[in-house]
Length: 86
Image (cartoon, rainbow, N blue to C red; front, side, top):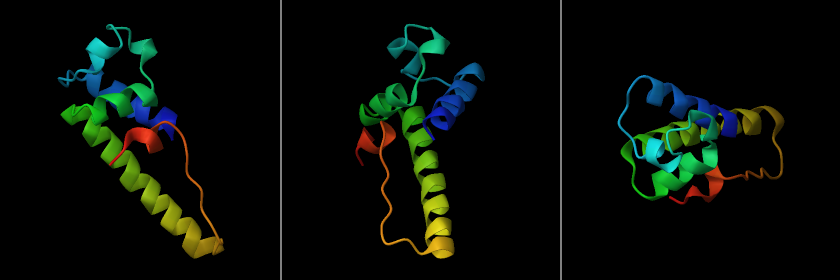
């Protein structure tokens, strides 16, 4: 998932979306990571918030599908995006 978050953010930046992400990575697109996107979202960057919300929505859909299919007793989710806050 973290690669997908970085890819989605990178796609937007390449399309010219205005975001503080470019400043955070010093203009070096290869330095873009899900953690940087999460930090920017936590700081209120609208584009980063949108990317994180979309990732969360997609993750929720996937987890719900797995729960319905496999009926696990627990589901654990972690990583830098999960630490992004609300």
